[in-house]
Amino acid sequence: MLDWINQNSGLFSLLAVLAAVIIPIVIFKKQRKYDELKEERTKDEIAKRELQDAQNELDAMNEHSPFPYTSEIDRLIRARVNYLNKKLNQR
Image 1: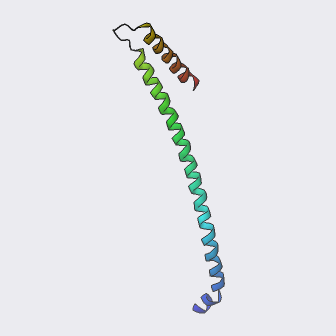
Image 2: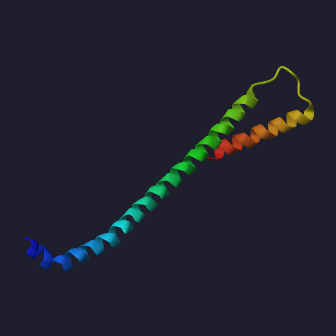
Image 3: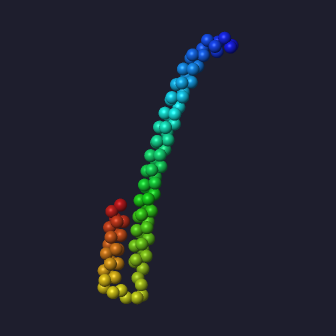
């Protein structure tokens, strides 16, 4: 048995070198793919969070205050409501 191992030691060395080169490449490719998927999920979550924030702000602005607004404040509020509606309808 030891004789056979000794005769094929060059082959075993070659296989070890190939494994030392191939395995890190495979791991690198899988890690890169995982990172790309994670980045896509993060972008989607940020977009959903922005839409939810805009919807929450719009809902809060639609609740009317019992106090009257001055014309300047009323105009700013209406402009913000229009902006939020456009943002929500755009996506």
